[in-house]
Image 1: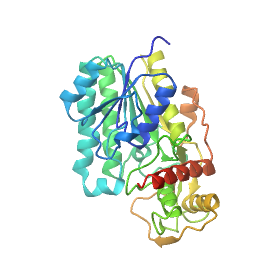
Image 2 (image 1 turned 135 degrees about the horizontal axis):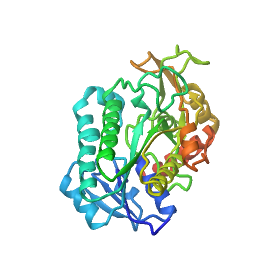
Image 3 (image 1 turned 90 degrees about the horizontal axis):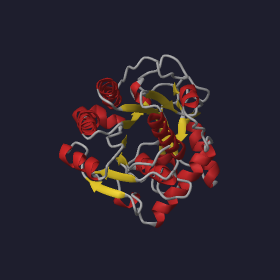
Image 4 (image 1 turned 90 degrees about the vertical axis):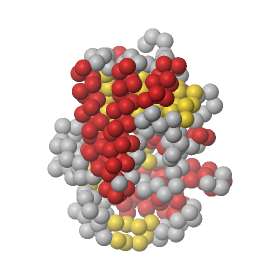
Length: 333
């Protein structure tokens, strides 16, 4: 590969974005972060990484950053991610996730950026008809979050057909864990990720974990999800970038998961094992739209990229998340 050009990471001060910044840096890529710090943290951006405090909906600020730093590719993580909030405030999600992505894309085209990697989601599938879920499975989002991301996928396909830019949309399943070196992790207050919630309970930040539904069609009655370690996910983005550069005529949409699932009860049991404590479990009814199971068919990403999971282990994900939670506790956060 020729000399490495600067990569703009939107939302690079957030959970997944900050891990992508580390993965890019570890692979020798120059990185610039743009983040409005509404949910991200300035301390999550490493020293030596360019930082622009701005909203990606600000076309002037985005274009200025692309030009000033001679950006060659964009990794786009900025957006809103809480499913119940998207139901309560859909316009926020269509602004932050869809309209702002359109602004970012327009700036990319205008400034001659050739490669675009998009943080998408398994929520684009809605209630999956078959498990594991393939990329060509029907896309029927059941909430504005999933729809806002799917709309951006459509925009990417149309823009790539009309302009000299290619893209990779990576559909995440359930992201978990933290950087094994404890450089960053999930730090958002009020996070809804199960493993994050569970390790908060294990370290005394919460007094219980609520299990929503025990009557799912699963072995133990609790919902099953495909959990992927955030460091493996970040590595997938670097491989996707290299694929887009090597093959500029191609674009891709791929699932990011391990192809196997764990139930809510199994996750909580793993946290109990890691701490030798027992998290208090409280039970409530199923939430509307929660599928019994959601597991990725990851055969496409394994066939397309040289990516191979390195931390494909529930106990490892819990261990890393727990270590990061203790770092936050030491910092008084």
